[in-house]
Image (tube, rainbow, N blue to C red; front, side):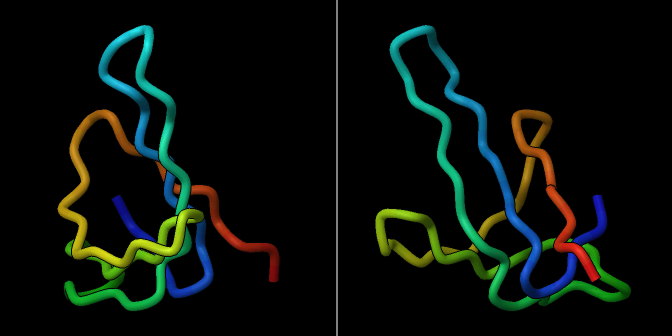
Length: 62
C-alpha cells in the first residue's frame, strides 16, 4: 500500500452495523509512501494508522 499526503484513506467497518471511517493522510512515516500514516479522520480525530486488509487508499488528483 502506497500513499502520499492529501490522499484519502477508507477503513471498512468490520461488521454490518459498523460504519466505514474516512480520513486524509496528513503525513507518511514509511519509506517511499509505505505505512504507517498519520491520518486526520472526518470526525476530527487524528491517529497513526498501520493499514490492514480492511483499508484502501483513494489517491488525490494531481
